Length: 276
Image (cartoon, rainbow, N blue to C red):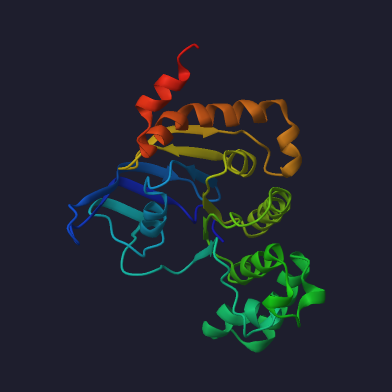
């Protein structure tokens, strides 16, 4: 993989959803301008409904911007998911009728990879993710965290240049999220891909990321960028670092008013903040 691969560039990107069902047009996103470097771990936080998933759809090539340009490695993002992009979502995307081995091998088989290479890649991925002894198990026999490991392994074997994550651990408890965060960082270091994570968890964004972007209430724009300066070798023990609390505090400081706007509670919040 080229050291310069996986670059994302957005210029003046907006997304407006057309009027329908008695509602007017919805300005969902932008304008957004951003450069994401190859190999960067980049997270996005923002209030509900601010356009985070819309942004991810544009970067995935699943949706075209209303205005502006979106490029992946210098080529326009439009007309379907480009080669070299993998995705993991919050919803359990494992195939319940396939065992763990066949789940992980699924994408390779669809790409026509030869059997020997499939065996090599799947065996390595299962070992790397601690799933070897569960190769013959079916998703219903696994915990939620293990099913997400299967989904990550299925993407891992494809060696993506860009990995898109939309709340992948949102359904898991806090302790499992920390463990899965460690697993994700290991995968990121192993494949060298650019990672873009959408999350509601400020702690998750602060722990995992090289850089965190804060989005405004709809239409979503970037209003702050926080560079963590963590070492690439980091893991969940970083939450004990004295700087960790400062990073999450800055993220919340940027996000609080936007979250209140999203809920329509600016006036109520002002009343609650008055001295009693």
